[in-house]
Image (tube, rainbow, N blue to C red; front, side, top):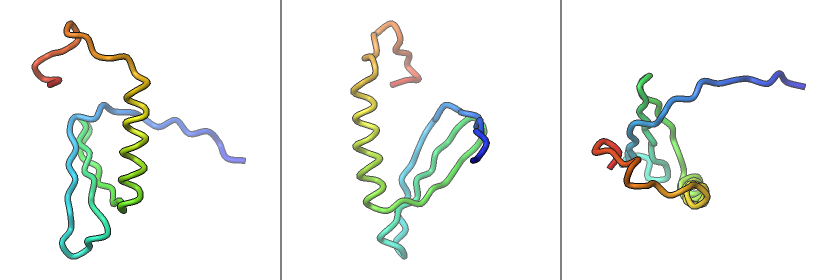
Length: 74
């Protein structure tokens, strides 16, 4: 049995997909937070699964109202 681990969570400020011409079967996913950048390698299957999961999760969240929209969030 493993101990439960509590990891810090930081808001994502930006992301970028970075292709590697020398490795066409993977892409780097760079995620920026206030704490810095993280870089992850992903295959096509991972990107497809992640895309579906993100869309499914977004559909379950309440829609933004205009009162919650700021110029920075667009």
